[in-house]
Length: 393
Image 1 (cartoon, helix red, strand yellow):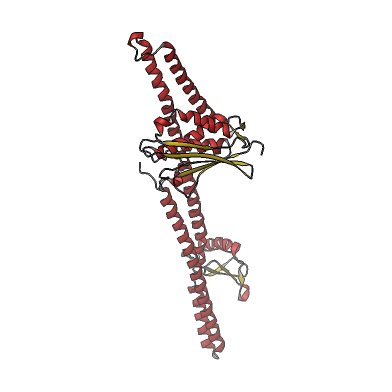
Image 2 (cartoon, rainbow, N blue to C red; image 1 turned 30 degrees about the vertical axis):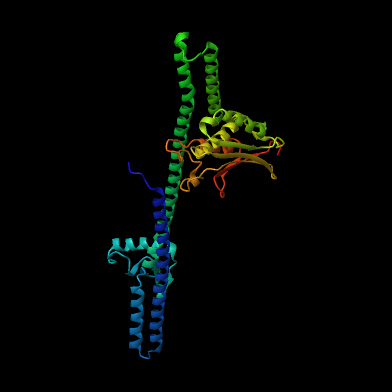
């Protein structure tokens, strides 16, 4: 199925709507100019009739005046004093025989609709002149409905576009989440499978000098990792309990977690911490906050892969009841093409990445903790700032 380019469709509808408004304004101006021209010509004929001294010439001027009124296109119906007999008609838009009862009845029905909008004018001999709108007015009456229809169509397309984008983002988020879960579960499961194969081997055929207790310790570590992954995804799927937690302790726990992995994940990378233990506690969930920080730090490690550098984590209290924590790396920075979408699910600069880490961090910081995570501008490398509310604020 051909993918609809919603921004182009919405822009096209906006241009159509704008053009309709311009056309509507031009038609109004043109109608007013036509009316002004007609009134001027009628005034001219009246002046000619007043200046003529002979009855013949005055009658001729009045005939021309009548012709001007008829040429204006205004529907005109002349009836007798009792409005029960139609004497003459002009510009009705259809042919009618006034000498027949059917013709009289048809015009009398039209009179009722005309009088509902325009009260009749009493003429000489108590005759009544019933009139309708000019062709210009009838044309202009349709334009507001066309503009309203175009506006409603634009709103509908905009609503559909927003809904489609939200659905697509939701699908990307769930897909990325499923891949992340499979990835995080895959490593310990593969490790457990390997240890199971080792256990099947006789003691003399096991690699190295592996003892039963060594295998048991390794299996226990993998099981703890599986439990940690399961607990994380369980918490991200509901509203976890928030309480006062120490940001200093969270960062230190993260440091210990990364200490065993930095030699493999980031050779030549220094981790510098500046998170005072005097900081006030923040309102949060320790498990999820560690996960959010871990994802941001892993993003920094990916930026420094193969080149080395430094990752700095420092935090300070802000004066308005918040604690600000910044994670800065000395890498090449974020590609400008994805800078504005860096937190969207599926957006990544890595060829084999799924773009779920930073999206999860935003979900944890903003969705769960009512905080704020942002990519700061300026300077070398990349700097992420996370703001969290103080627990006693």
